[in-house]
Image 1 (cartoon, helix red, strand yellow):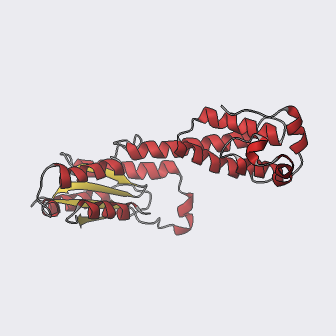
Image 2: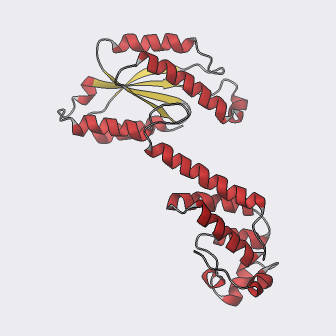
Length: 255
């Protein structure tokens, strides 16, 4: 756990810039600042942007595997060194939210399904493709002859000026409805995965029924309330190798 400097340190640095104080006592480490919290200390010393700095640090801590408790303790230590009192509510909230959002995003990537929509994750779809290319002994190039991707895409909002105002619940609802229709048509062993908040991909067998199933999906989707969106649905061929398939999924996952 991080250690704190004495009260005299907090009193002497309050009201001065961090660089001015650091010139007196040495490096930020000599000041007793926790690792990764120098940007927060700089913002506190200058009197501006500390919430933004806390958000950046919160995301960084989550990526490094630091617990939220340890992050908040480090924030308190930083505050006491620079300001001489405990953190503000806004800065605690900014760090906590950023840490939580980053952690949740990581969990979604490594889990098999999104808990909100029930759609498989991109990581799970990649794993399934790797199994097909490498784990089942299929001859090189045969995967693309036996399997294909069916892509259901929700393009930009027709009310383009309001596109950035669509809330997360609306995005989740439209993806859930699109996912339910897709799973109704592809109700067997196919993998139905969500890519971002606008695209669904199905790993399906390339057989004589595939075209008919895609046509049925189009008809079903046309009856859904997707909040003004018109879904595009198409069949995407697979490349001959696993590396090309991974690159294709990355391209499809881009917004």
